[in-house]
Every structure is written in structure tokens, then in C-alpha cells.
Image (cartoon, rainbow, N blue to C red; front, side):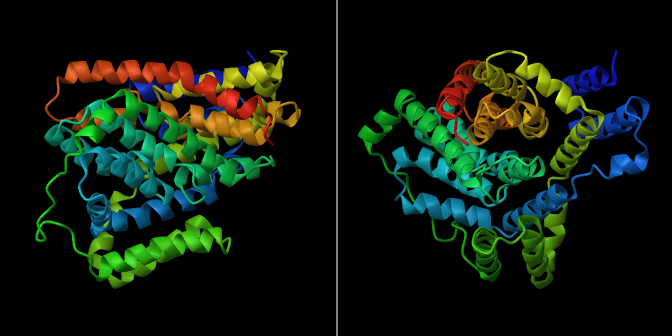
Length: 415
């Protein structure tokens, strides 16, 4: 068995063990990078350390720290409450409020499961109170998270765009963002029409507004945090500042002024996600050094018809991601597609968007973190029946979404 085959088998084993044993995939990936790199790849520890993605590490810590501060000082609660008030409490619009709020949270730096963990309890509480289909509400929360998940300053967007730049591929952060936003918005519209949204709109019922004492109030920490989020967007998009370093700087300033919320926020940085992503990317970098990426890329091109090979990669992303980490899978799939894209027969911009969307749109599966959060927070439902509904819907998305995004973004040969 060649070193390349061994490294692929270990990668598959990492995904299986992480899924079945509830072990952090990043920790397993670091172990795999060490064992495979030294025993099969002929790399020493120093060579493996050079593969650590320091830039991605700073992005993950910076944006999740800033977002954790926003959560700790109540800024995210204020945003949700303000959004509900903005639509006058109209029940038919509340699912869309949750879609937008979750999308805004991920687009400004929240990791998708963190945003869903914040919004899902509120959204599903509304669903139980006002007779909204919980599948509709839960699915709109998840698709909202993915709609904003590939903005240029988001965690997912930063990772994918960083991989594209590192592998010297043509990229378009705006195209990636708008593609994911469009696909998830289209799915949300269909769900709203199919799962009772029209009935809600006809009833035109209005939810009673919160008492002034209950609704979150704007204070100095919240105003400063909102200003920091705006500064992050302007600084990175207008002045081309580094996302991670800018977010860390803003978080450091906020923590100096309000140290109490800072102490709480440090513990809420998504360290398991940081470990997962950095571990997987380190392992993939070891695969690149061993020639495994070129080996797999040549195997994919051996399918003979490039556009069908692209469809195969989209389905691999969708199927595996329904049971494993979406972001960890993206970290592996995009580099695996590099030799295939280098042939120039498939547009890389459209292909990267198709793979990224295929690997994230399926997060409604009850086996994924987002789907599990929706299941756990559902109120007044038959949990077994609701699990089955999520499973069936997740299966439909896995079967249909990769084909649709392939038709939309790969077949027209964008890039």
C-alpha cells in the first residue's frame, strides 16, 4: 500500500471515528498528521509544524471572540428583539426574522452552530406559542445561518477564500457569498410556501409585544459592540484589513473597557471548532506535502467527463457532511479538487461555490450539529416524529441540492 493510499484511508478513518465516537475531528487529524507524516511521509516534526494554518487560527479566534463578547454583553439578544419589533410582531414574518437574524450573525463572524444555538431556542419557542410549523421555523434558522455563512468576513467564507488563495486558484468572495445566500433563500421561500407560511400570512395574526422592562435596552457596551461589528465590516471590505487581526483588535479594545464581559467571553470562544478546523487543515497540508492531493486529483480527472467528476465531488461533500463536520469537510474537499481544477476544463469559481454549498446546505440533517440543535430545542412536539421529519427533509436536501448547485454553478463554467 502506497503512502498516498495510507493517508487517504487514515483521513476516512478520522471522519468515521469523529462521527461515531463523538471525538473532536481536529484532535484526531493532528494525531493523523503526526503519525502519517512521520511514518509514511518521511516528514519530521518541524516540517509538520510549518503546515499549521496560523492565518486561519487568528481568523477563528478573532471573530469568535468578538462575537462571544456580543453575546456576553447582550448585543445579540438586543438584535433579535429589535428585529421582532421591526416587523410589528407579525407572526407570518417571524420565521423570516429568525432567518435574517441568524444570517446576520454568521455573516459578521459567528460560527454557524453558535448562531443556531442562540436563535433556535427563541425561534422554536415562538413556533410552539403561535402554532408555526416547527420544521419550517427550524429549517429557516439553519438555512439563514448558511445564507450568511460565506460572507467575506465570516468564518466559513474566510476559510474557503483562504484555501482558494493558498492554492493559487481564481476566486470571487462576493460570488461565493451571493451564491450561498441565493440558494438558501430560494430553499427558504419554498419551505415557507409548502410548510404553512401562506396560512400564517392569511391569518395576519400579531404577537403581543414585550413589556419595556423585558426587552433588552441599548447601553454603552452594546452600542460599542455594534460599532465594532460595523468597523469590522468596513475595515475588511473597504480597507482590505485582515479579518482575524481586525476582529482581535476590536475585541481587545472592548475587553479593556468592559473586562467583566471579557472574562466570560474568553470561555465562549469556540475552541472545539478552532481545534477541528486547524487540525483538519494541518492534516490536509501534510497530504499535499506527500503528493496525496495530486494523486486524488488525477483519480477524479480519470472519470473522463470533467463536469460529471465535479458532480461526484458535490455529492461526496453533501453526503459526508450530513453526518460529519461541514467546515472540516470543506477543508479537505477543496484542496482535493485543486489538481482537477488546474486542468481548466471546469470553472473554479463556480466549482468552489458548488462544493462549499453542497457541504453546508445539508446541515438540516438531525445528525449534523445544526439539525441536532433544532431537534433539541423543539417545544411541544413528538420528538420521534420531529426527528423523522428532519431526517426526511435532510435526505431530500442531500439528494437534490448537490445536483441543483452543480447545474447552477458548474455547468455554466463560472470562473
